[in-house]
Figure 1: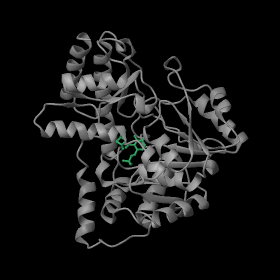
Figure 2: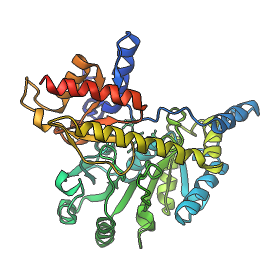
Figure 3: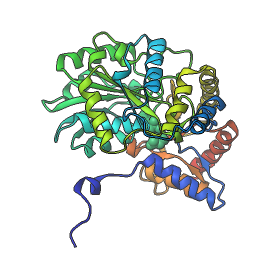
Length: 394
Ligand code: PMP
Ligand code: GLU
């Protein structure tokens, strides 16, 4: 029998982050005491006011289809946040709501990529970007960075990765997996470069509200001349601890992109859940106090985990500016006791010491593992104790 799969599907890798979370849950269900540093999702319950809004929506009987790109109320709530938080002015018709920021990104790549178009991804990158670009028929072009430069690329490296097929660049700061920001200098240089080369920028700003040390966020679209060429992606998963409710969105001045992504959605998933949209309206419009409370807790956890990592001989890490990830350099252990890279190292941690983390390879670096600190301080301490033992035994 001929292969049942399309070439596209046959080549697609599963999401490593979700695969680790699934493995972690499976081991826990077998009664194994696994410490989970895998999942990139807040461990907090969704704030009560947001859950209430979802329940009220169901009780009102709002269980019908909504407009494909989201209710007007939700799109207005998104517009209000952009305006109040950053002075970025959009209209509700510039916003398309989807089933998570991941879905918004998927729709964007489907909408903008023709066969062979290139999209620049800066390493280390979130696992899903290259796969989504490839799934749309495009070619991810990876720009390497170094820890010496805090994973910030040289602008020349980006310029020299561009060809006549380059369509867009995808940005994500603070970054999953490093938690690092880019400097204002780099962002401004990039703005000049993309103007000169007439490129689109997709800015995945899902961690914009999880920034530490009192740092202020600069959305890419607020840089001079950038609003018209930036598609901003965000969502409620991380900021409001709503991962399972699946609401994300894009905002863009380009009505072509709005129309194309809405059409794609209309022929695939239709609108995101009506109930989840009602909850997201409350998340974005109601009092924002929980956001800073959760951020403060993440900041304390960052201090703890970074301190504990630094106490382990052989490991090193750059302190993240935001998000809830530590991208830990494990290269000192490569070659020891048969550990050939990050996949082996992560497997060793999981199988021998019952600590789940994501290997760096799917993020574009085999020298690292990613530890998510979206988990409580007791678990962090115990997990790091196990990692210390694991490293000493290699
Ligand atoms: N972008 C980045 C960088 C992420 O880490 C994630 C993971 N949740 C997403 C997008 C997608 O988030 P969601 O689909 O839950 O909105
Ligand atoms: N984005 C999170 C992570 O990187 C959640 C999993 C996913 O959506 O891939 O772990």
